[in-house]
Length: 172
Image 1 (tube, one colour):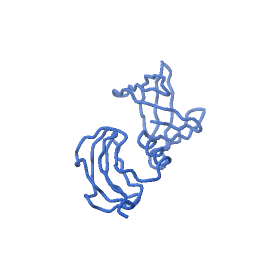
Image 2 (image 1 turned 45 degrees about the horizontal axis):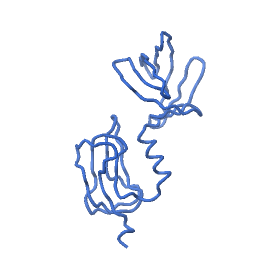
Image 3 (image 1 turned 45 degrees about the vertical axis):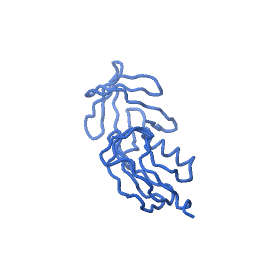
Image 4 (image 1 turned 135 degrees about the vertical axis):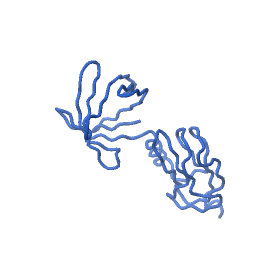
């Protein structure tokens, strides 16, 4: 996932978590830390024999935080891999693709559409759970559901076609 700390962007990967012991990489550099959330967002971090204390104040939808330490305050935004991927796709693609895919493996939670159904831009066509988070996948433009290739409860792989659509323009 990507973390924005002020103007800095850090790439963070969770390698392993057992209890309070967390192994992660930050911009490719490995760290083994012990993290304890004490109360009300206060946490204690032990790294290489040094202790650090921080207060996490959650903003908005839980993706933005104000992090206070003894000497500094930081605005932090968590950008998960899926949100980053979707943001990048939205910038580079304006036209509706002919299929809906997930950038990561997960599980199909809900399919609120049926074959032949006409969809408008930003309508949700499938809900996927990945990394304990649910994401609504929406169409970018007006289209019709051509095929539903998965069922609710199915496990999916990254970039697997889930639903195919045909643009309403194709019918003209």
